Amino acid sequence: MRNQRFFPGIILIGFGAYFFLEQSNIPVLQPYFTWPSLLMIIGIAFLFQGYGAKEYHAILPGVILTGFGLHFHVVNRLEIWPDHIGIFILILALGLMLQHQKTGSGLFQGLLFLLLSILLLFYDRVIVWFGLLENGVSKVWKFWPVSLIFIGGYLLFIKKK
Image (cartoon, rainbow, N blue to C red; front, top):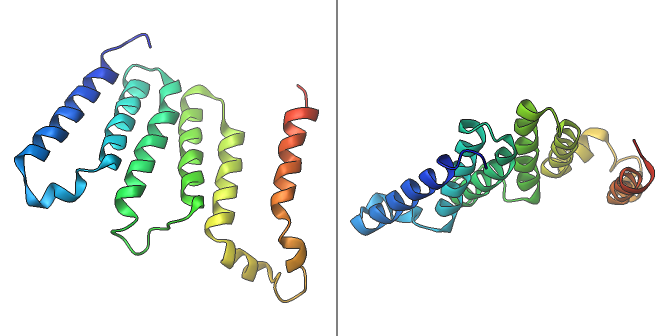
């Protein structure tokens, strides 16, 4: 990291505010003094380092940590928030696409993870939409993860640029 002032500065300010407010015993804030808040503070520090210091490789971990922290805060407070592996893949896709905006790399991976997260989050609706349950293709549909393995193997071992 060329410019070292953003990351440690945000970490110190964030952790200082966190512990000061925790000691203040403000009843409305008590549910937020948990480890997801600390994840968000670290994620926000990475985002400031990524955008503020123009060190764009820090965007991806910033989005992941901030997104995971936000997810763990919101998942038990909002009924509509999904508690599913698809949301974690969606956060990863968002991080890759935001990093692509600044670096020009990672778009394919971001779109691939976005498609995978949509399939996972809306699995039941996708099956009904395609009508797979009615026409007997549902047994074949159970093996779609194998296709992901084959595509990954192709990209890893066979396709060379």
